[in-house]
Length: 197
Picture 1 (spheres, one colour):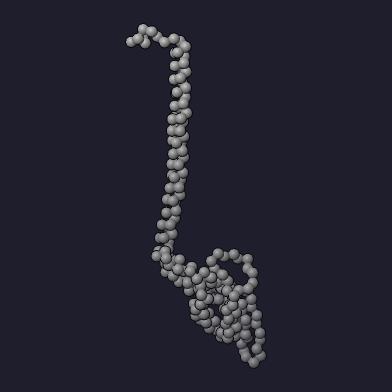
Picture 2 (cartoon, one colour; picture 1 turned 90 degrees about the vertical axis):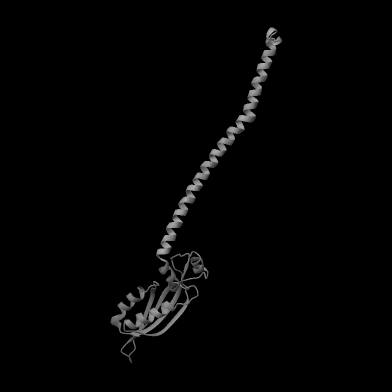
């Protein structure tokens, strides 16, 4: 009660008010400001995590769609190894080429496979070109059908060059064709696809 009877001097009150004001400023600087900074930092992190979460949800949706597409096309993808072999085993090509050539009235005389040496403008990430040279004999009038049937084969061969020679002893001409087909160089390519099962 003595404080009420003897109020402090005005100077002490100013000092006390100044001290209180400084204490409040220090409290704001050292307590409230870090709290506000922490809250804004947390808000930024929440926004970043929400955007990451949205991106992950979109990727999950895309993977689910790819999985359903893979399930729908599994049989086709399983035959892909025959169309584009990794080991240079072109057994499907060989079995189809003989049928195509004989169906058009030609006889297969010689076939050879080699690494493709020419530069092509097509840039691929997985498949690489492989050269095939064919030597056939047959009638000239079936040549257009032979070309169409060759290029319609399932491994999409491309006829790059063609030469012919007349044989006076035989009624059929001989033809040489250079064809470009594709194979996959990475031996582990189909293993990665099969791991998706």
